[in-house]
Every structure is written in C-alpha cells, then in structure tokens.
Length: 324
Image 1 (cartoon, rainbow, N blue to C red):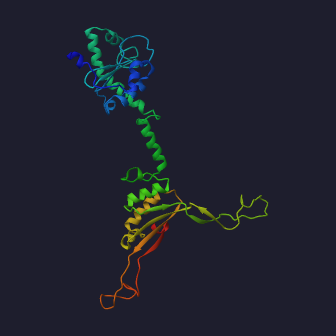
Image 2: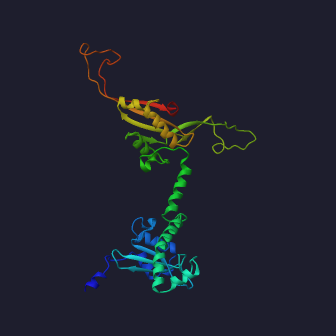
Image 3: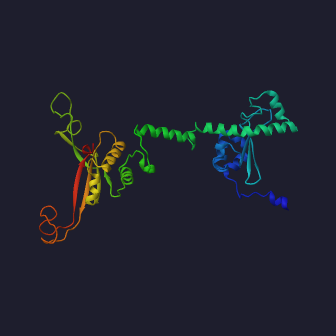
C-alpha cells in the first residue's frame, strides 16, 4: 500500500504540450520539444543555467537510423516529476555523435561499463543541449526568446536616434509618437500633473512658391494651385498647456530656468526635427481683499491697487526658440 501511495503523482493533469510530447515525441523537433518543456514544465531559468531539476536531456545511445530528432520523452514520478528527453541529434554518444567509434560502441552496450560511461557523459550532454538551445533562441525572432528581445532592442535603437539619457519612468520614457504619450511622459518627468499636449492646432504656413495662373504650366485652382501667400494647416506646431499653477511655480517654466531647460531637452529628444512648439502657462492669481492706507506698508501700483482685486487666470506664452 505504501509503495502504491509513493508512486502517485503530485499533479492532477499535465499541460497539453507535455502530454502531446510524451504521446508522440516523433512529431516534435528538438528545439520545439525543449521550448515546450521550458514553458510548461521546467523551473525558472533552469534551461539557462544547465542544471537538471525537472528535466534531463540526453542522446539516444542506440546506433541505428534516426527517423526523428526526438526519440522519446518519459515522465519519472519522483519528487516534482522529472522529464527525461531522449534525442537523436548530436550528443556525446549515439548514432549522430562526433565522438570516436569505440566510445559509441561502449555507450551502446547495456553492460555496467556502458551504463557508467553514459551516466558520466550525460552530465555534459544536458549542459550541451541547454547551451545549444540558448543559441537557437537567438535566431528565433517569431517566438519569445533571446532573439526576439535582441531584435526589439536593435529596432528601438534604430528608431530612437543617437541621444542617450538615463530613463527612470519606464515605458513612458521611450520616444513618443502620440500627444497622449508625450503628455504622460512630461507629467512624470516634470512632476507636473497639469501638463496637456495639443497637436491639432491650426496655423498659417508660408508658401515657398506663389502659384501663377495663366503660364505655360497646367495649374488647376484648388488642386495644384493656391491663391495667396499662406495656407492654413493643422498639426504644424505643438502647444503645451501647463496650469493653472501659482505665481511661484510658474517661474520654474520661464526660459533659462533649470526646469525649463529640462523641458526643452525632453521636447528636443522626443519630437522630430523641424516641429515647432509653444509653452502656454496659466497662472492662478488669488483674490486680494481691500486694504486701507496706513495699515501696512502699501505702495500704490506695486503691491496694491485701487478697488477690489478678484481672482483671475493670467496666461504666459513662450516659444520654443526662447528655451535655447
């Protein structure tokens, strides 16, 4: 009874890829088999380290014709379950091994000497297969792996330009291609939650060449010819709306301030060259109660005015050229 209980597995159901691998191993290539084991059975980073915890990869010792890359896959009911994968591809013994023939013949025997030799070589076989699998992953761009990660890094390096800086805001720090993404990045980097980005504003753009009707060229009004020297375009410049903020906070966004220099650096690194932008700062002026002359040090026109001062919003506009 005790032997029967010890033989019971600790899992209720195997993953479908593992069941298919055990049932029909000849349908899998060696890479696909190891990929299925890594994703559905192996311990984290087990395939990278080469340590055998829940998997053991070794070659098939038989010296016969190899009909497939994977010979068999067996599940040993010990501890957490160990998958033993037998491969017909390469290895330190077997029909596809580059080892000397006398070593292959000794490993093919079921004698104690042959079993000892296979057990010794299996220590290196497992590490060899794991290293070969890691090398294969660098060439597999269609699945999650080292190759796909390096491909994304190279692609991002090509698209992001040559500017380098330390990013500390995660995904929001990468080069932005939308107004919402740019606004979110500026809010995090500038520590100002009121920043908004508007990129659909209209402006007048001067024409490089004025259209002339009646010349030899076939100009069509509204299609290839435009009357006037300017044209109304949308999205030619970008406006940053900041505020409403206090008078003290607004000084940090004035040109030549430390915070404004950081803002200019961020806009330069995230916007394509040639796109103009403006910074519109809304200042919240508080309400001032009435004061009588003689109570405090009052200077008319400096810190006081005639009448009652209501709360209001003032606007300051800075062009991108002022931040250079």
